[in-house]
Length: 321
Image 1 (cartoon, one colour):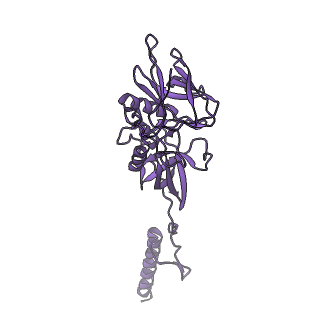
Image 2 (cartoon, rainbow, N blue to C red):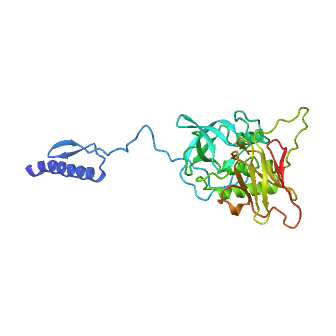
Image 3 (cartoon, rainbow, N blue to C red):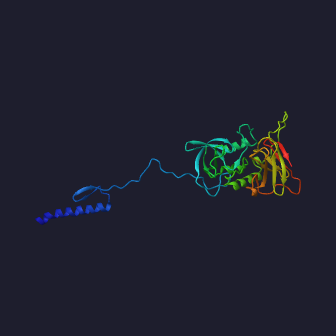
């Protein structure tokens, strides 16, 4: 009888051992048996979560914009911003992490519309409208060159849309802005000059027909600055102009024309009283000082008369040689 009574005890031992091994194998039991007592099973650690997950910074696509403006091959890290206001053709106000900044596009210049004590210049309103159509209310991506700000405290940046459109270059390509070199921020100078050449060839915007000055019922006032053409070197493709007036003259909106072929170089910048400015026609001569028009081929005819004619921002002829 003792032998038969031991069988239930043995069965209980085997069953308990089987359950214990099952717990170790499955690791899903709520507890394990150790020395006849129960100990809680170790809990599996959960992934740590935070209230704010790190999100990758959005970058513009590596494709040309809808209008065909090429995008630089390398896309360095850029800062995301929202355009909250358009100032004029080359200046906007952006919102970055809750703070507003005035931003000036690098490498381009558009006719004035809001500069104090200056008249609204030809193509200025059109340039502002083109800028607004491109970026108003949109998310943009900002790329720095060398300088952080200009002398007025405005951010200096290259600006891109989410689809990859390079806004600075697109305004030049459409003919609303001219390429303007302001060292040391010259990273995309060649591209901007290429876009200017395309606009010139197509006669877009600033490179279209020069407006004719309207007749005045009253005698015209004498200009505050008197600009003359000193010399034209057709072989070197350069023209020298001088301010012989008593004060500085802003050349934004002024145009130098090779009359024979009607090639037009839209000027910019300020020429001080008494100063001489050398204007280079060819893009290959960029970096030699003065002002560069960005042409890819010669514009002055050496074997026949081809006057250089200078027009002011109102389309009035100022000088010829």
